[in-house]
Length: 521
Image (cartoon, rainbow, N blue to C red; front, side):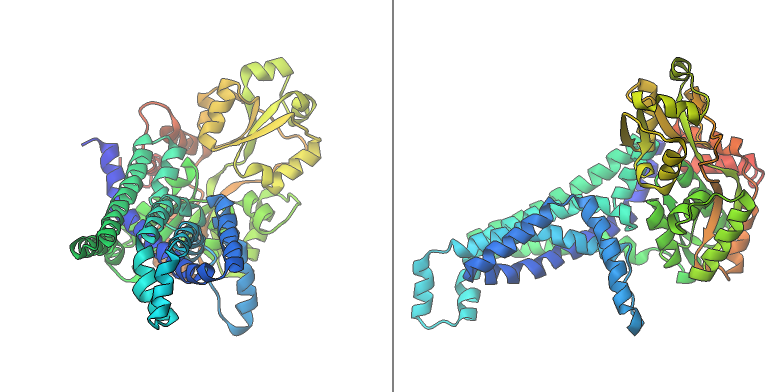
């Protein structure tokens, strides 16, 4: 079997378990909301218009946006709950459950209302005529007649929910989307295809079993109904088995390592994971996290460790606009993290990954670009390409104001496609990353920052509050500090990002460990 396929398939069982758990819980939540509303709405035309309109409105919100909106909502709710000492997780399973549960409401609600309202009035009058109560009429007459239509809505909701659950990766909830997002970033198409195929297969199987139940209800065939129900329940339990068996040890010996959504983060996460496994820990990875999500997950203990960058934390988390010297920034950041969250900045890894405006050699010659001052003069004629976060980060506002930059257009890409965009001429300049091997591989020219508008971005190891006093945990990671030169990090990144003979993040992590003398040749 192809190595990449084997590595991709090895990730499926645990991620499938998480995906099934989330999808099943969200579908049940949608049912609990939609069915009572449908019964009430079928009897009250005004209420019907309101609830169907509200459900339709939720459906117009993009899935990613709906997932993200629950983060500030839960934070605000936690503020209200703080006086009583309660708190809800703002990341991971809960926000994903709430968002997907709302997404499942519309098809169930619409079909249920249609099924109940479409019942022949003569049948309803006959039920009233024999003296049935409202509950008896619903249970014995209306529900059986509307059931096939309701089941069609449940099937639609199930397929939508399973597909949308892949987006839960962005809020820190494991799913088959982990494979898709990681594969897109590292251009590991086998990983992407495996994640997509597993999600599609799950949706088709669930839809088929629900269809069998629907057919049984329509034909009043108990074998079909029970056969579909038993197969569905058994399939869910089998899929969930890895979730219950994961770990193989105590919670204290199981650690979760976070990573943002680009190759360097995947490599460093695997490098830390290798060392923690050698120290006796069972390791799980949470990939594809956004900057805010990763930091929040660490402070709440949802992840135990991850790599961040001083400039990112200084501007995003601390909301600071000044740019102090490197050591002063690290000291201030360490003190702030400790005092406010009880977490720890363990130390620098030894390299910096700062933003670096880059362009092709031809474009640099044509516009005479050497510094960001030169770029500011040419910007009105140019299109800028950035990663998906940059235009909304404080760093961009600082750079824009310092140099008075005003580009003709700006486009956002996943980092992999951002480099392709500047190579192909779709954009003229990109906000590259200084430790990225693709700068040299693509022979891009980087522009200097004479006004010092770009903060320091030293890579640092962030340790969660619950692991700060774990001496074995900290001792396993400490040899990485000040051990990784930027040249080695660039080469490791390029091993994953190059077009041919690509390495996996795990392979690049092992190479990097050997390169810096932390593993045997």
